[in-house]
Image (tube, rainbow, N blue to C red):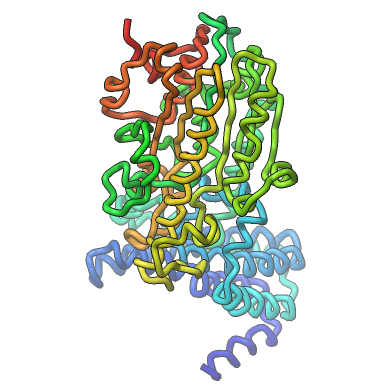
Length: 533
């Protein structure tokens, strides 16, 4: 190890030519930061054969070509610029490799969107000693050596010739390896999401470009009419990282929903999310069209639409990631904490603080409330519930989830579901206590969660290859007796629904308020579909 290290250091002290430096950095990038990609490739090839080695060499050639191409172009502009970019990428690569190895994530566009929309209060939960080790050994040390290195000045013409030669040689090899392209294409999402640094660099740019293409001004939806003016309150609870598999209401063998199981809450079967990460899922929940539809316009979301039609809209959040909304009351957990009492003010329970009073204070006949939970967001599941809800023990208390036993991880996660059971039952009691008002709540999680199945943790896996644990979500409905009578609901019909999606939310809320417009879809209105003539 000492000889290798001294040889590594000697290279940076030897004042190499620019082309030599680029070749060395390219190979170093592959060796230090792309070994998870080659490990994945080996696991998915048919053993160590000549055919497999040829495929691995083709993958190596692709990474080498794209890395060398970018570096040559940067150094053609400026040696200082090239070195600066190498330093930044070394630091960023060390962090990226840690997350790929620790949580088995794929750094595609959706995952980069997830990262950009993560607030510090959540990101700090990922800090760990192992992350620091990765950052120092794979980031700080290489970055320091790169900064200290001296590079011989090379003419731009010579550097350009080296670039052309590299492109010709490697492109020729890749052209002769066409038989391996099919395997690469079959695993393109995984390979593309693990190629350092171009996975996160390219997909970060793709995400930002897609954001820039969104219309700044939302297109208003058609005005609506109301079939009645009954006093009605509807609450939408947007859960976080809750998966149906761990709800006893869905057959899980642990009592994670004891209170809801004893109540008149309806469990909707086979519910699915339209995305595996929060921002896309929440946008889908609040959208009037199905996720399969192709829309070029950025329509106003459900809360803004209802507010503009005269409904009093209250948004309470302990999370983030919602699209731009215009509502009469927007309260963050920080706002709610100011008047909160009890031991749940640091948890989702803060969302219920003085909720009944705020609803009662409204002078509107129709009130819509959104409660956006922090729910079961990982990796620190143990921090998402008060101590009295730590029923399943022992629990995982590390953010490096693979270091916990599967039992400890499941215990911590199940405790978050148990606390959510308490939260939803408290909401049920709150709504049931509002006099002379028809009320209902819908609860649906934004997406599910992976807890180590197949070596995958958390969420955000590309939708096309996301495991079912990230897409099958709980979807619950509660209705007051007066709401059932008002809407003429056949409860058995609602219970017998074969499947539901997040696309049902928008139109079901419209149906609950007896609201009709050109965009109302009765087929997606669960209440309308269950109404009796």
